[in-house]
Image (tube, rainbow, N blue to C red; front, side):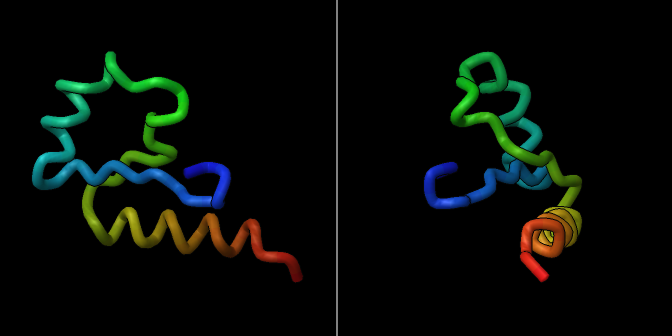
Amino acid sequence: MAAVGARRILVETGWGMQSLDKYRNLWYEQAAPDYIAKDLLDAAKWLVSTIKRTTPG
């Protein structure tokens, strides 16, 4: 995913927190989330902020 510029976000709502607790020890560096968001709005705000920082101009 990193090769195409994708960002990995884990959202704590729904299955997110349970997945974080259950699978954290199985993640490899390539599969770990870039950001852990409290909810979907937090994830969207983080994503937009990363786009603004990486967009030239």
